[in-house]
Length: 76
Image (cartoon, rainbow, N blue to C red; front, side):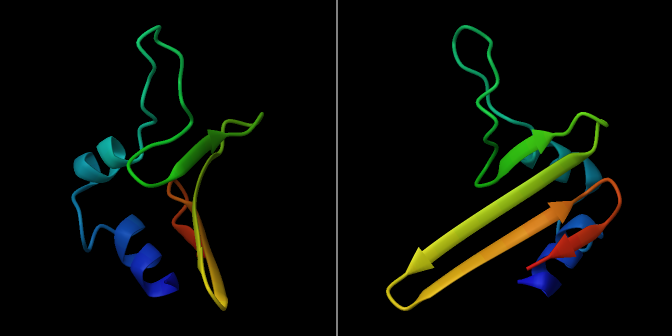
């Protein structure tokens, strides 16, 4: 997962434009952000740092990937 995240934010899978579109939160019909993009939760902290997360679980396992796409940091 760490390699996938690094390739994603490193531009090896998608162009920067496509990645930005993928990580742009959807909006409700009223225009409010859902804080959820294409498969990723997206938030911006009080310092303006964007963080992206995806978690999952199944019987016997759980995973999480956290990305800071603007600085290229990925943690699993």
